[in-house]
Image (cartoon, rainbow, N blue to C red; front, side, top):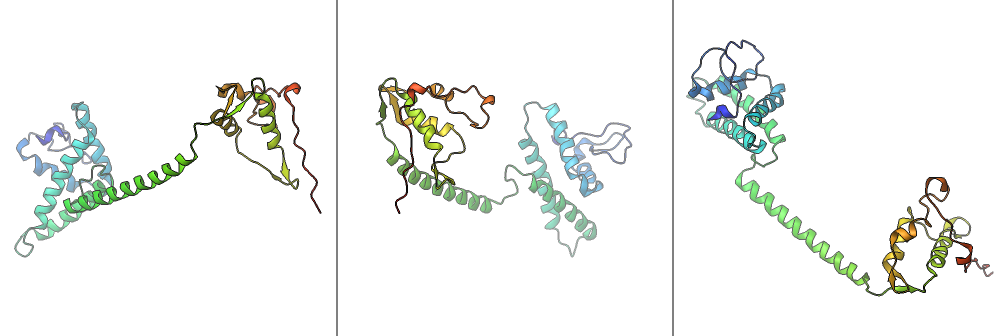
Length: 255
């Protein structure tokens, strides 16, 4: 069963650095687990990732309907089962105590690697999983509560009413908004400032109508330059002089 997940060693493959499972000669496939862990204990800790992806690639190439999750859970179960069996041994009776301790340390190292890449929380105990899910639930409920509060505030600002512009005077309003952006306070700070011109166009389309009809965004684009200092980069048109009906003039400060 496990051989479908892990690549068996080719016959006459005498490589000392192989990651495959088994011997270079005939070997009993029913003894898979023995050879599997012999390979685990033979390779260095620095090769855990290489080992993982080597056998994952083998599994997926032979099982197109498989998934990394299925492979990971199979590998995790093998390692976890072996580690638990070694830990519960009576260390005072076992004649293989020294070897067992080395194998435990090696499996703990491999488990550490697997935990780091565990996308499916296989390493969690049932209790830890319940705590995590409860925490995530409380966090989600808190987020929903905040979003509801934000939505309530946002709804107060919503309106179905519009500011209507008489037919033929849309560009007059556009010119006023453009002029407004040129105004400064004490000649230093912009009276109104935005990083882009899009916000002005969106504001007009959202809250204004022309002769009680919707204003199309594309109709405004040519009059709001993304870069007022370099008009060569955009297809830009000035508001015609016959539509410039108002001029913003700062008043003199009262003494």
